[in-house]
Length: 104
Image 1 (cartoon, rainbow, N blue to C red):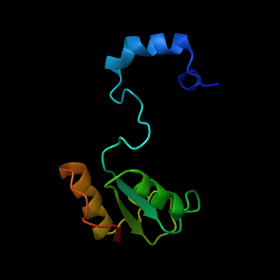
Image 2: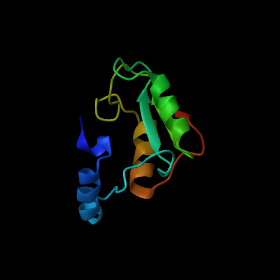
Image 3: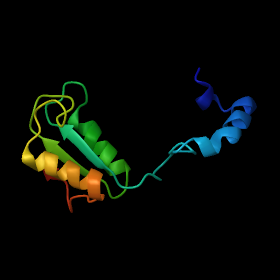
């Protein structure tokens, strides 16, 4: 069993010593994450689009951008188009999310 999830006292003590070392401490739980841009391919054989929709809904303020391709990582798999590249670049460089979910 992963010691991070078992909740024992030894793990809690060790974690307390290293909280400042971890950029995402405490681990995200519930809906405390900032809004995110979720990217999905509509014909992804590994991750169904429903999972991307659920993730987008679970993180308040998030947006979903989809591409109608059969790939797992559309941005890096050679299936990106100008719409997808522009939307992801705007988010990563400037923190801008589209006003609504976007189909590229």
